[in-house]
Structure formats: structure tokens, C-alpha cells
Image 1: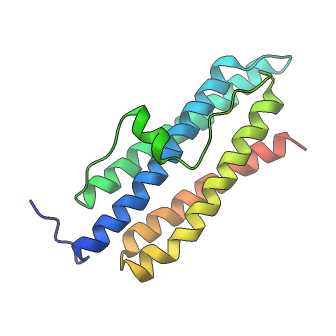
Image 2 (image 1 turned 60 degrees about the horizontal axis):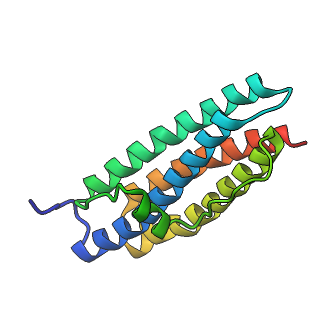
Length: 157
């Protein structure tokens, strides 16, 4: 059934296209954070193991709500690793070390990259595509990434 929420179909399609790219970024970051949780080593292992767990759980929630937002707009959600890797702005680095600082620097860079991408799209959703709901959702998502980045950055000082 057609989605009739006061947004033109072509705008819904464009919003969904951007959201799918954001979902790919979120899923890749989730996976990288889970990798850090599983593989971190060093004297601070237990503390960082729990820290990374806290962050990947937040990212898991983000991927779910983002996928639901895409569905609310009447579009389907990609859900294969191949699709995510083709759509993401992030890269899969093979870190040379499993220490917490190496992981934190990598994850911080990804959170900052996602924050920039989100910030660039907030106005587009509201003004260009006339979708204040998605603009508001993305603003909240930006705030979550800024907080997660702050937590990572604070560990690196």
C-alpha cells in the first residue's frame, strides 16, 4: 500500500536513499565496535571490553530504529553485508594492534565522519525533501554520535 504522509513519493525515495547509506555506515560501525569488544587486549582489557559493549549496544539500537524509519517511509531496507559495504562511507581497516587506544582512535574517526555526514543532511531532509520528521530523527542521531565520540575522545586524552 502506498505511503501517504504528506511527502511526495520522489522525496520519500530520496530520503530513503540517504537513510540507507546512513544505515550502512551505522552497521559497519556497529561491526567494528563489536570487533573491538571481542578482540581488545591489554592491562585495561576488562574496562574497555565493557566500554565497547556499551557502545555497540547503542549502535544496535540505532540500526534498528533507522531501519524502522526507512520502512515508515514505505521503502525496504538492505540487510546484507555486501550491500552495506557497497553503500558505506566508512572503511574496514585491519588494525595492526588490538590495544584499546588503536581501536578508540579508529572508532572515534568513524563517529566523527558519521556526525559530519548527518549534519550535512539535516537541512536537506527538512527543506529540500519537506520531511521534518526525518530531520528531527537525524538530529537526535547526531547527538548520540557526538556523545559516543566524546566518550572515546575523553579516553584518548
